[in-house]
Amino acid sequence: MTELQNSLRLPCGEILKNRLAKAAMTERIANSRQEPTVEHERLYRAWSETGAGLLISGNVLVDRDHLESAGNICFDEKSDLEKLKSWAASVDRPQTHFWIQLSHAGRQTNRFVNKQPLAPSAIQLHKMGLFGKPKAMDESEILKVIHQFRKAALITKEAGFTGVQIHAAHGYLLSQFLSPLTNRRTDQWGGSLENRSRLLKEIVRSVREVVGPEFPISVKLNSADFQHGGFIEDEALNVIEMLEVEGVDLLEISGGTYEKVAFFLHDEEQRESTKKREAYFLDFAERVRASSKMPIMVTGGFRSSRFCNEALKANKLDVVGMGRPFLSNIDLIPQFLSNKKITLDNPPIRSWLKSVNDSAEAGFYARQLIQIAKGQPIKKKMNAFLCANFLVTYEFFKGLRREKA
Image 1: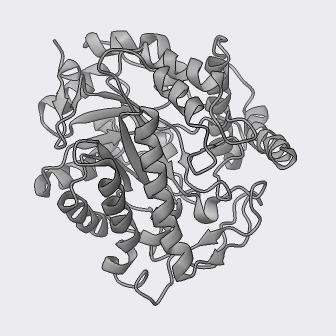
Image 2: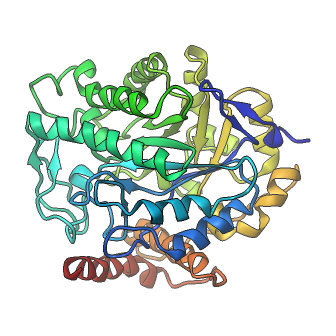
Image 3: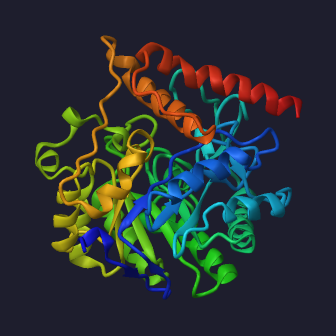
């Protein structure tokens, strides 16, 4: 048995059957009412057949006016519980956990959804003209967000999902509150780190109240924003201490925002020491391990089963998270779990125009996800410029259909 095949008992008492997780990847395939479809069921059934012990959904939004994509699912009072139950039941492998990642996009709300989204402060995200000028939230709007996460977590449990992840990374609303670059408030929700982390803490507490002590709660947190004047590693360590006190069951470490896409690094852009060790955020995970007993999941850059098993054996992390390999190498995941010599190859989608490479990469994997969701074979060779244009075009038409619904 490999280290990846060992089980893990979480603080709440639930057990992950192995140490491999399919990390969250936004699906963008919801219907115009922000509900899951048969494509979601087909997609997650395919992922469950890989044998991974934990599947985490892509962004499920708690506010249908603040979607990261017009194709996001939303959990709120308008949700059709029977459709959610059907989605949860699509993962029927023994002991396979299926958790819902809950998020609020804040200023990273797609312009095709909302031209003036809410945010901690009125600081606009300038990226390809896809985001509107946000409105600074008042106290009542902040308290409403806490209620929305609470309600969505309750729906998650009632629908039959086995855990919840609160998304506080990648520049979405909770990450915006944590960062001094996007949070310029002077009230109890801004300024000091204690104030900037208040919303996350209140949401974790509220979610725990409604799901109970035995239901897994995870938090996805940036190690840093990787921007001058932004959220930094030392602050992240302090927030992690707070999360441990609140009884979080699994911490997922990531990093970056839409402006600085550290969570989508190409191999040659990794820090040299990290590149040698393969995983993007393992450096920071080792700092966390020195001061926290909370189970740690690291996502980003894992490609060889040998390295994963070595890192687990050395107790550098507890769960290996992977995203893109579950698209481009989905058929190899079972072997990855059991074979110490398997390496997953994810060739980057590149063009001569460097400014489009991030969009091309995102578009390429979005198209692979849609292929699997439709029950069709993946396509490993695609034009970089067509992939870069795909997401903008796709979101435009998704937004139009949403408006007409």
